[in-house]
Length: 188
Image: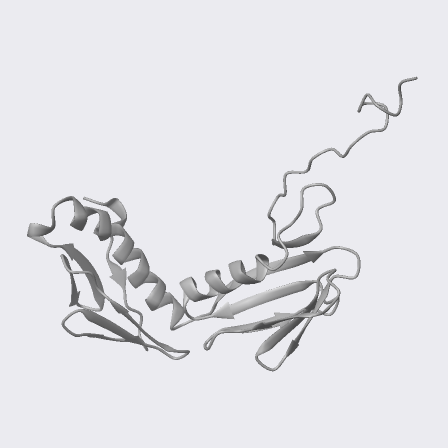
């Protein structure tokens, strides 16, 4: 059994949970989210707490899904109350971003500006210096995927560190070439 899967999920006041055959719908003050529950797993609602129960005939498959379904259910309950956030930093000479409606327009060292269309349900904010992008939304998986897609537009390179990185991410830096160490031009 999963230790994470055995923990109950508390449903706070103001959040409504509706369990249908294989779908769980959670409605709160900020959003309404739903998720499909995989086959061997069932979800029970008692006294404003949700419990995830692995199916009897599922075997190892049910045990593998037990903790994951509980974590996803907890993310639904949290997401309808408050937004999840991911912050990205733009590092590089002239790198900047701005929001235009549902798009983020970025200058990333290419010959043209790059526009990124935000998916439905995800918002973005850019700070005053135009070097930090905060991606927000009620769906944790969608916020993480959106942040990863923005980061993939210009992955940090290891020599000077230019690119888009997560806030607090450490980029492994490499030493560049040296004139005397190469063995060609410096020797005479």
